[in-house]
Amino acid sequence: MSTTDKVEAEVRIKLLSEQGKSSRVIVKELKDAGIAVSQSTVIRVIGAKTKKRLAAVNGISAPTFKRTKRVRYAENVRKVKKMITCAIPPSQRAMGKKLGTSPTTI
View 1 (cartoon, helix red, strand yellow):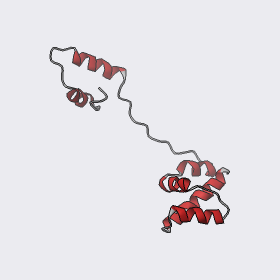
View 2: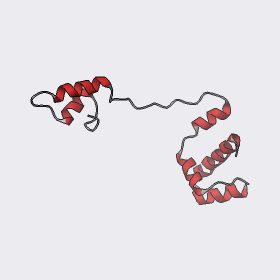
View 3: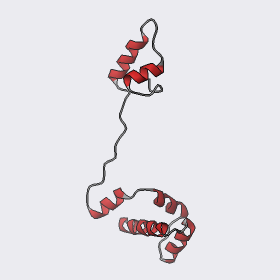
View 4: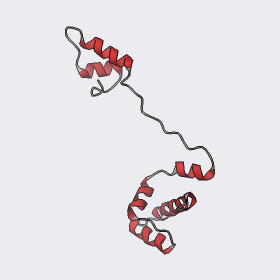
């Protein structure tokens, strides 16, 4: 299936879903229209965002996705080492609060 066919199938799936049809009915209607998709594909498309594929078809740049902030870097590791070398080290929770990370990251 080419990219334009995939986009067309996704648009039809979204449209049929908005009409309140179940995934099983959507698969049957698409099969009658000559588009072969599985029920799991229909469920995935209903729950997925298709911005990246639509951007590729329209020739515009794909949307960027925000990455999570990296917190286990050298500066924090040094700070943790310094904190745990004292006579009475703070708890993991206290260190996490001080560094702005979760206790499991410490």
